[in-house]
Image 1 (cartoon, helix red, strand yellow):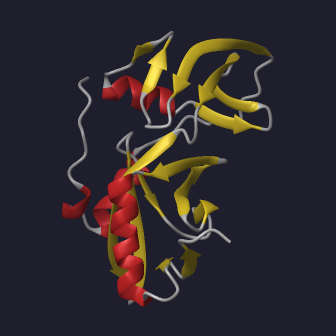
Image 2 (tube, rainbow, N blue to C red):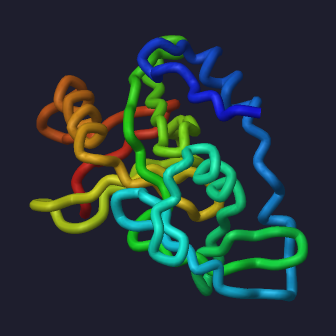
Length: 186
């Protein structure tokens, strides 16, 4: 079955995005507790590219499949199967947010991010946007799931900054689903 890339985020409404999220059934990696562990020989670089033993994995469907097996424990990042977990090196965050869209739900702003794995994440209390680093060179992240974050790429960061400036240029924060997220580290 060929991998089908979802349509552009800008052309989707909230209902269509919710449908796409519901259609993506992730394996229950948090429930799996395998005893066997190994090294996968894989790494995710800071720019979101995936590598196996030094060679880039270029097939988006493969990256998407592997990303669905990701879990973060206190001892690192893992690709988890029911019978084994394999360590994976992650330079920064395992995902990259490559686009953002602001929509409205009953007068409340809603921010939806598209990841480099073609997943969608809606910022809310369970999926907060966090600013790390220092006020002069902040890095922005959105929580994807289970301790896994996506770092906003430069253009997505700029889009979010524009949304914050329109909201209130003095506070540099954004709102989504009733939660407020400052864009400057404290």
